[in-house]
Image (cartoon, rainbow, N blue to C red; front, side):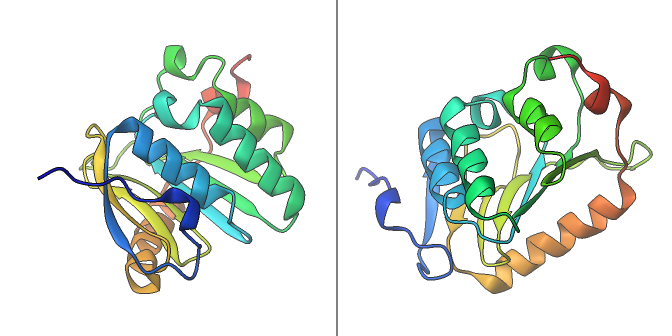
Length: 175
């Protein structure tokens, strides 16, 4: 039996209570665009290395940029586990973070952390999330309205964010 892809056009942040599996880059890209285009207050991203296949895609960056322009109260916090200069060179999200620094803040996780972060997720407005339990897998879950689970992920993000810090390479890398 084949699994049907979710209908990303009908997902409403804060309304659609569908918990759905995501498989592959294309589904994650579509779900990310759908969630970012609806965020109004805050977006958090926990990422291993700003996955270029996801956060360096023109459509996703344009969706986020447009949303920030429309919703000037929107704030984005990005937390990266691994900084690889060759991967981050010319990264669209980093470039946008420099030009829209009032709205986007990027930090690196604490280097003294005993266990590395294995997961990756995006949270929006404390109600919706896209979650990959293992950052190197292209499968996971999404839900556009699950405040309880989103709060759990957000709490984890906030705790990890508080231990992290700005990273020199992230601020000074030439684009």
